[in-house]
Length: 341
Ligand code: PLP
Ligand code: COI
Image (tube, rainbow, N blue to C red; front, side, top):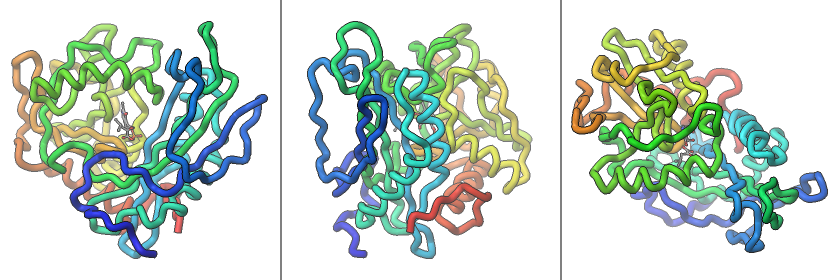
């Protein structure tokens, strides 16, 4: 298979339209068969529910070329499941989970020339979307929906590749108790746009959100979960009903305990504990594990001992093991890798 003429190692996290996307329509109470399409554009009525009331959600996963030349996906069944949960919370018809995984396979295969080669530092990002398309003017769910999966080759999410990030404690809240913080709804990201632009303008890479009920516990960032390492090498991650159930974070906790023999804890983490940790990282499909060097809380700097130049040692081991599993260098737990080709 001839690959596209792309300088893979120079790619950032951007959108490059590829040849094929998966499209399926929901009408009269049922999903159609779905098909591959060459058309990257979507034509919508001006009164479509997605435009009026933001009835839209998404997922994010990746395809990798392994060391021995296969193309694989990482735990797509969990993305399918999470998208169903999100859809139900937003009163949308879930796309059948087995068809979701099958559609991921079809769209990756159809775009094989766009899957970055092994060792290039790039991966194929897979973005499923589900949104309400018929016109509604009173506040109510749509009755017709589009499900679509496009793919695009990407490099690192944060500019500059794997360099420690500087975060700030945000004055904005991300998710209300009993709200939508735990699902992958577009509205959670719409509300974060002002906060991220402001953070960037102030020289920060991302926002750390606190629990909005008490503003005393750490939650997550705009696009990734948080992970900490204690001075005695335990991996700790925030427990909260208002953060996204990151598939990367859940996998890393297994990697930490089963592969690295480290203690793990999922628990509430007070903001006041931040200075106690030896390492911090952001984890997610796009972020993989991005090391954090510093978190600024209204002028007070919390600097992690791993510093601003390199990943902390435990973060590095987590990163190497997870990416080793994804790229086929390290045997994966049963069911984690779906071989596409
Ligand atoms: N938290 C938020 C808000 C996200 O947008 C993402 C990205 O998907 C994550 C966490 C990480 O989740 P995952 O590891 O499933 O990609
Ligand atoms: C992902 O990691 O897949 C996400 O959806 C995060 C997004 C902010 C790019």
